[in-house]
Image 1 (cartoon, rainbow, N blue to C red):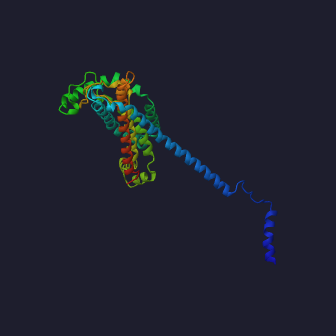
Image 2 (tube, rainbow, N blue to C red):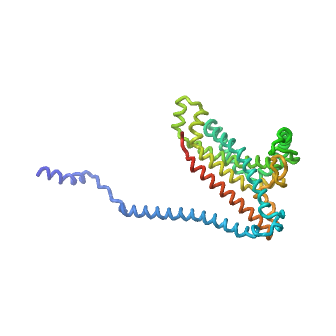
Image 3 (cartoon, rainbow, N blue to C red):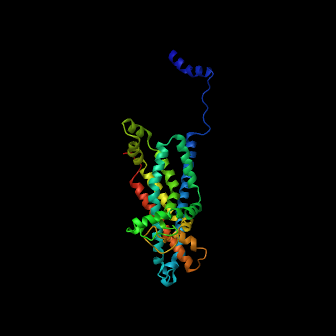
Length: 331
């Protein structure tokens, strides 16, 4: 009896101590789970709608371009600009677009990776902060400013280099002379594009390198690796896919650039030489001729835009495939 009495009196003694039992929440666990499930479903539907909206916009653009460009595909070749048909007209533009973008990518990617590594792992903190702000500022400069710089300053100052290249390396098709007297060549346009995409690749690569596992970096240094060996063995393998993504994003910017190329290039016939005047890109061709275009000429320009759309899509799909095969990892 004493044991039962003590057990029964325990709650009463606890309540007499002045501590009141914890109040029950306003909603039951079932209600909270129902509310949380409703929020998840709403969020899922909203994100699904956003994804479908992007797909719909992409399909809509493609349908519009095909519809407007169809007359250029079936037109009499003699009526298309150049008099040899649409494909004879657009192939030199495609070649110029790819060449300019490739030059920009070859120049900008190693420089951007070097700058990103210096900011993330070598520069003092204050210098790294200043350089980061400077890179972000370069990304905000309008393309027309880069075009003016390339047209008014770079083309004149780089002309002696073109003469040297054509004189000593003229036996190569890429540097066959005579060198342009104005300096407005495909190589000049590629350099301008490289400066334009450099801040994009640098910013993304810097953020990827900063995400490298700190423990792996410290372990490599503790085992006797130099700073460069640590970067080569830990940071670069980890950020490989990020650098590829940044380079492909910069390539997309270079493929679609309009005003800078239109201001720098001196249009002419297709040539393999990078120091001769000539070549043109699709975007610059559209920008220069669209205001006066009408009828079949307008359809031809839209068809060229459709080709550029397809090239950009192929580049992005290829980039996604490369990234999927090389996930972020540390070897």
